[in-house]
Length: 350
Image 1: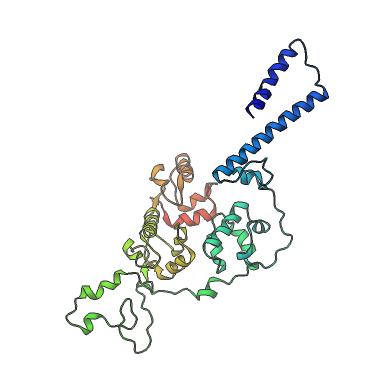
Image 2: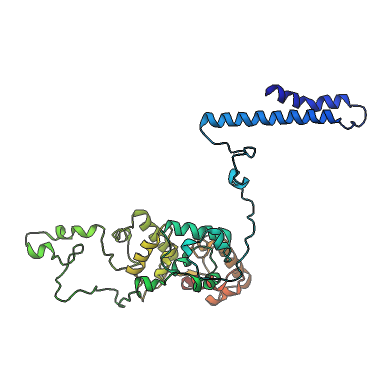
């Protein structure tokens, strides 16, 4: 193989010396056949060497000249070439979102990257159980989802879990007990506290089970719960609890329990549990962002602003003067109505 490679490499030099005076004449037919034979021999020798190397290390051959490798070049080399366009369906019909592939989602108007995200999210969550879960897919256009929703073979959330519970304004939820039921322990329904039957038992000993994970999640105020309170819920560990608290601090407080969907790493079942047992006090007011005095560096830290939007907000303030009301943000073309509605509770004019 080395001799053949050397002969092929020296061939241009020989031709240049032979035809140094004037233009090189056309090669004869036998010379062309000889060159083709030489090139073919080199390719075959290189192919055999790759196969031997692959067999020696126990790895399959990943080259385009391997006839057994029928994968497209994008799969072999990981290239990000533009995908071929997918023809859209002429008419939508009822479909099961758990049975669709990414290509079938694209046929219904979903972009390729969002379609892959839908399939991956459904696989990770063990399948979609109700329609509202698709609202959590990042990048899925709400208008497109509204058009697809009537054709989804999925029930609504309330059909699966029933209507959402409403909590009294005072902030304390009293769970309904059967008639004649006694005071229950936090972990064992119907069991009386230890110090009620045993006067010698200490209160600390009777309260010790409360630090464990509770089978029935307690109702708590989302803006007052610390990581310890969050970790009492089954499925919430130290990292997840810390993410919830960090998002609350960056936002300046939660104004809706639905903002929990923005916490990374919460699977649908755990998210449903949190939505059922968390509440926002009606009198709570979040920490506002002062549009006229907050610096660019501080403004960009807010999760609903970011660097690009913060730069536009500050530039508009410097060019047109102080903001008079929160609705002045709608005068900025980079802020649409959806972005404004999310940011509105955190805007302060002072």
